[in-house]
Length: 177
Length: 434
Image (cartoon, rainbow over the protein chains, first blue to last red):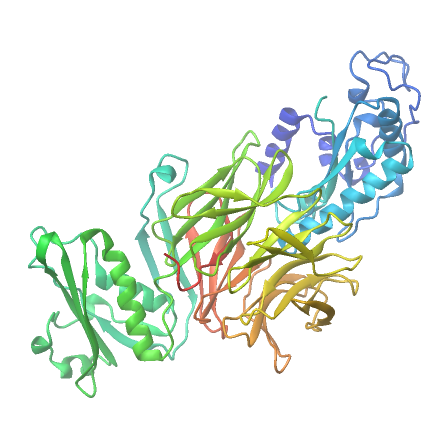
């Protein structure tokens, strides 16, 4: 598996995929969920969040903000969003509501088990669940587009649960960011 | 019966310039003892100046071995190598336990053309069963060899041979930087002569042959969204179907070539639609809140089978092409998906989960009997040969995905290893592929 962990690490470096830091283990999967919401901080740069240290950069990249989490993971054969992602989705909804010119792709993915076109449909169900949660909390319906990639773009290539759990995901993609 | 054939792959310019390696290796992993012994003697080409570069007898021998129905005699065990009837001593071949004998030769013809002659004998009766003289040129000798395989197979089994057909499949490679390359390739049924018909940095999926074998429809993700394209193989020109927000997927041609069944999610959840190629109009066929996808037409064009999770878990359903109530076909197991009809319409093949393993199974429609055919963990995308004799599918092999084939009775299995990346979603062409 080491090769694939390296591959994942290089993917993280190249695409700055949020959630890559999760490779360390289960307990980290919910990183970000415990931090407080930052509903008012949707401007282009922010300072002084959570731990009091300053962050110079884009709000979407602030590691102390739930906005920095852009990947939501799912249980096998499920499109239900786990409660620990509430703060993440609330933050993204608020960000979109405050920035009506921003639109995102909500990109659903599945693990490799099962058939490919069925997995496309399953990954769309995941994407639409997330899309609905964003809309319910204030994101405009024209600001999100659900896309379904099924099992076609795995993040990790292994044939085991450790890989599969990282591939069952929805990515929030800010194309202009 | 563990016979390993190492065969050099004819590479197209596009492939040889990429990272793809050299060889396709076909490995018969499970055979049957009832395979018929046959001697395929090397064809004589001594009358051709410089000889010929294609070993016709070897191609025929490999074709027959792959079918699982025949056990060709090793050349090393041949006592004589006759190329015409008067040179044949039937007692020799009887002594070697052979049922049948194939001999032949390549002869010069006018204007630089060639004639390939062959004769098939019943060794015990000492009679010719069939024989042909086929005019050709040097560039088409592989095709002639497959044609001979078809004629031998049909003569000895009573079933039409499928050796002259083609296969389409998806390949993908993931380079170290995370950059992926997806391709659709079309090759001869034995994996030779692979040509790339489309390359993309984004996923390509679900290749589907037109009934005449001249076109291939497929799904391509371009600018993040999925669309269905239909590409004419001879010219490489492709046409994009009108696409909609959401899923545009799972194309399947009607047997008469006038319509495509496909999956759209523009009206909510994934549903089956019928696209009329002539009027370019879409008609919605299924209306469930569940996932309906992976349609396939019955050979008579009257029904469509599809995967639906309307009962909670994915199962196979059948519906009239005119709509109405869908009827559930699969009841064994909690996961049955991506079904397709056998060419005679009497069975379907599908992905079937058993004990957490995804396997290829067939379901006899009359009896409802489910027969598990493959033995992998993540077997997918079963596709019948046009004569119904074999099913091609993809299977995991270590960390890679490769193609495999199983006879439709489950008795003969083989793996087709192509060096390079993953190979998946095989689609076997119809008979009329040009």
